[in-house]
Length: 59
Image (tube, rainbow, N blue to C red):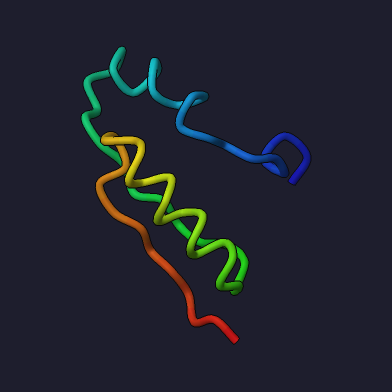
């Protein structure tokens, strides 16, 4: 996992997306917690490039 085992946030992605002509993305929840689901919903509300959120079942 090495290089992939880190957070990838909108600020890391936005410039590259615009450079290659991608207009939006989908955030995918990786931990099954209500805290992460809430954080992703808030992040998508503040970042128009996030067009959707895929959440897993929270325990």
